[in-house]
Image 1 (tube, one colour):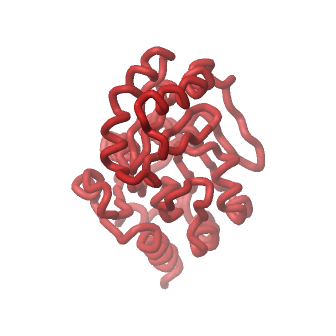
Image 2 (image 1 turned 60 degrees about the vertical axis):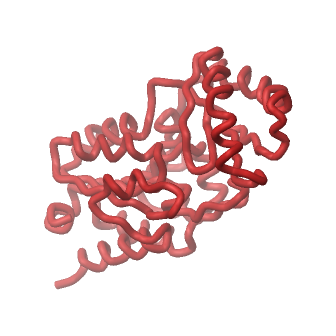
Length: 256
């Protein structure tokens, strides 16, 4: 933090979306960005080298859930763990992997064969997720699905990314750590802060710790995931705490 405060122009601020900038909700399609996030990110962007949202969501979905983010100067959204990139109003991405739609087509029959009728399937374009938060037994259903979904993923050349009451099938070869590391190199960053809330953010924490620069990791704390809190330099109380921390950071930049 001292390095970021002394040299904000060299700092990259990386942020997860769900659970970090947006509160977790039972239906992921009804998530909304924290109301204070766009304004604080806009102010933060005036001082630091770059602000990047690094998420498993498609960038289009992030902007749909937080339309005011489009107006954050210089914001970059690294969606699908870095496979898709939104910057200056444009999205760049390689062709979608063939395994994802094939796995998604088999999911309803697989869930039915397991007697799982209350899990939700989310089409994420370059990935497909199965959510159990709305199930009668969210944790029990998640455990029942782990091995069958791992077999389905392997069949179609995919990997399973576990999260907060969700299992996501996606292509291998990219995670938040790879995405963040590449972005730090691209921007010639001199320091980095990354904030996340879920198991998928551990790779980004690893990237911060492996980077050849000062770095700080922030956990958007919850009772559902404790692994990040154990690894983080700073733990705050959910998205509200993340926004408050970023607001305090921007205030520190302008103090005499």
